[in-house]
Image (cartoon, rainbow, N blue to C red; front, side):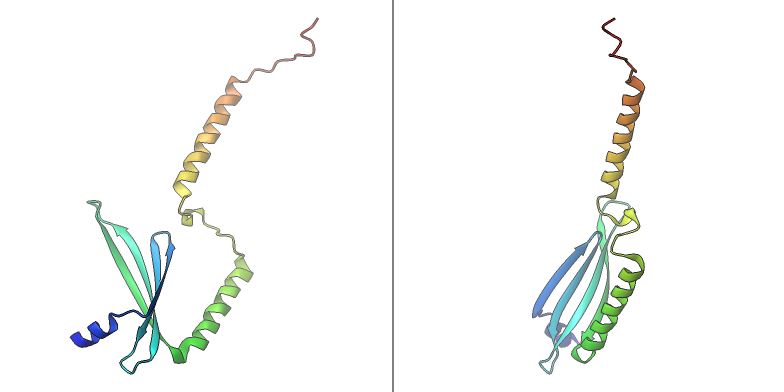
Length: 129
């Protein structure tokens, strides 16, 4: 078993996709027979109460004989979602800059409210008389 772990440790190709607190890894590995397969790993970052980090990982192993059906299924599913809900993200909380945007909006609203309170209605047309 230890030899198998050492054998699978070598990555042929790797691509990472960062998405907020999640990172997706697409790794090509080699079987004992010399063929390639794909592992898709979702790694999600969490924070302990003491401020240290830990990651939870979920892994999918995908072999070549399943590529076509997997690709068709994911494409069909993504198209369904985009057709039904569009490409716009509905929940702003998924935006990685949500907190800073919210603070700017609140600050801007506060400034506008203060400006409105300090505003005096002056009629300059009748000022020359």
